[in-house]
Length: 230
Image: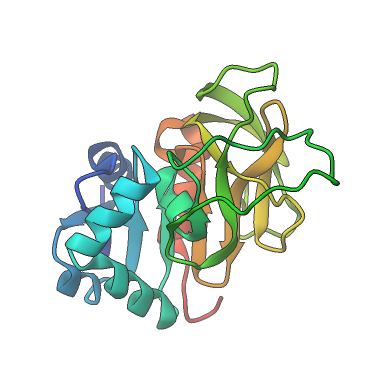
């Protein structure tokens, strides 16, 4: 296979599913370079932020290794960034993960609820990442295949069917399904955001590298995109 010489940075901050992402890039003819130093990020034409584990720990690792500011600078220059699983969640304003009990999804609107403490995220997307409520009749964590509904006109899902199955592993979710950045939706006891898209920033809550041919197509859409014509 012809190897594309474009530099694809896979951000290695100690909490990513980096090997499977790197292999998927190689399958598509791209060399995904694992980078563990923030200065290397600025030499990449595209970057991938994977992630598994806890939100607070991941943000602490990004900060400790100097990636927080580097990722924000990189994105501010209009360069393409793809978040995967926890990597998508880190792109939001913050998360309540591990900080206190969640408010039930069916709580009355009149119920006075104090704002929970938050782990601060990268802030590319508005909204707070929360845990699936305990009163839902579904298993948490949400593990396995589920149906993703693509929003019309999404470049992230170009060439994919309007609905397709993808592989998920998560206990926390983005809930603002009406937000303009919500490119893909899914349901697990409640509707949640399965993918986001805004300018040069794309992300998926599911694992495209583990979601068969259609997941690989989504990854290909990111790797093949031309930021100069978006």
